[in-house]
Image (cartoon, rainbow, N blue to C red; front, side, top):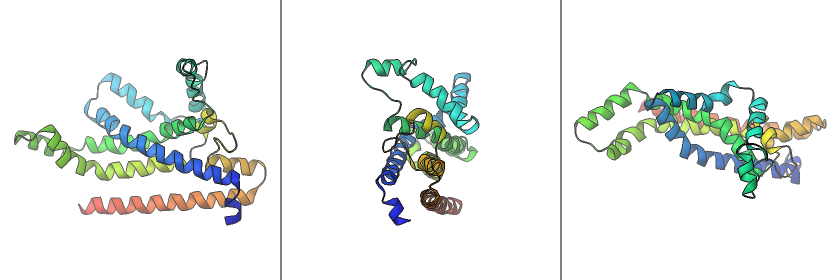
Amino acid sequence: MLDLLRESQILCSLELTARTCLISLVLFLLAGPAVGYLLARRPNTPVRVFGFLVTMPLVFQPVALGYMLLTVLGRTGPLGAHFADAGFSLIFSEAAVAAAGFVAGLPLVVRPLQAAFSSFLLLDLEEAARVHGASEARIFIKITLPLIRPSLAVGLLMGCARVSGEVGITMMLGGNISGKTNTLSIEIFNAVSRADFDVANALCVVLSLFAALLFIVMEIILKKSIKL
């Protein structure tokens, strides 16, 4: 199995998947808390529509969603045309793979945070701190952040797991370009297509070990949060 994983094409897929997960984690950390707070604390009609769009990857067929994004971000699409005029093409690139992972994993980050921000315990403690004259910054650092931290950590891990296993949106936006946009999951699909089951089995073992690691870390975080 180690010899199979050392092949250049497989190494490229491993490296691309690792980079995509890291990029997505940074984006999740920046966008997740803000979106979760918005959905929990500003429940007006535009926000609900935005929440529906964020949640779509959980309920909508990935290939169809990838095609819809392709029509928007492609060279002739409403957004893609502006990118093309600026000399930048998003689709069929590593950036497209990262964008696909971000779109697929964001709802798994946002939903736990939305529930955490909506917690009656959190709301009551924040209000009590305001009554006693605490500033909003101090409330966030001393109360809000510690209470949402377990939800944030679990959300980031679930989002990362989703990114590592994403196929449908990635194939539509990034294509299936060997050595450029083929992630581990897509490489498993390619290996099965060419009846190279040894490679497929080896890559499945890698993804299984990664999933098991994420599960163990999530269990540790949940147990610690329950004790708190």
